[in-house]
Amino acid sequence: MKIIEFRVRLPMKVEEYQVAQLYSVAEASKAETGGGDGIEVLANHPIKEQPVPALMDGYTEGQYTHKIYHIENKIPSFLRKCSQKICGKGCFSFHEKAWNAYPYCRTVVTNEYMKDSFFLKIETLHKDDDGSSENVHNLTPEQLAKRKIVYVDIADNSSLQSKDYKEDEDPTIYTSEKTGRGPLKGKDWHKSVTPLMCAYKLVTYEFKWFGIGGTVERFIEGAEGRLFLNFHRQLFCWTDKWYGLTMEDIRAIEDKTQQELDESRQKPGLKGTLEN
Image: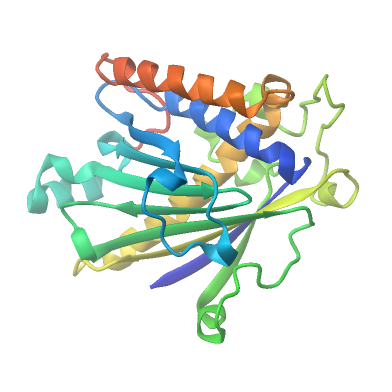
């Protein structure tokens, strides 16, 4: 079992991030869907309508979502070929169930073919601080001993894969007209901006297929870090698109996006983050 805590600093308030994150998820989902791959939304409703797991510190009010990620073409070719020999093409569909009891969120990802051999959980707590809180997830001493901390710097272009770079999603040159935030300059940009918050994303995962377990676990760590970096760069550079939206606006956007995803997934042409 691996435990990694990704810490993402952002120049905004926690109360703003809720709308920013939901808006950006909807937009990013459309960019990743096409040619059979992409995101299928099965459920999106209040948590109270869904059995609630033991959420952290009594966070029980919010939104529940259930999605299927069809990602065959987003898996490295060597893993794709190896896995298909064992379980067939369908093994690249992952179920994501999320309980968004903001500012806390729990996401559990499973795969019906791998069953207990695969486990991935992401718990996020959002705080108005600089990312220096030691143990926001209340980990036990045993868990803390296993935990690896990784800071995700949205302004560090050197940590990007070259194919992921987009000039209009570069926090080092973007300035929000509505808020005046940005550009984010230098490795210590977070020390001089206001407001500032941090998304503490605790990723717990395990892959138990003999022979490729270690390789897959390393891939998961890299993939999660890449996802958090690219997503939050977009989120900040889309500030003028989400700033001022209400939760009612967001729910309307989500309903429209769900319809668009269903249509786009059936159209030819792969989109988004692809692997060789």
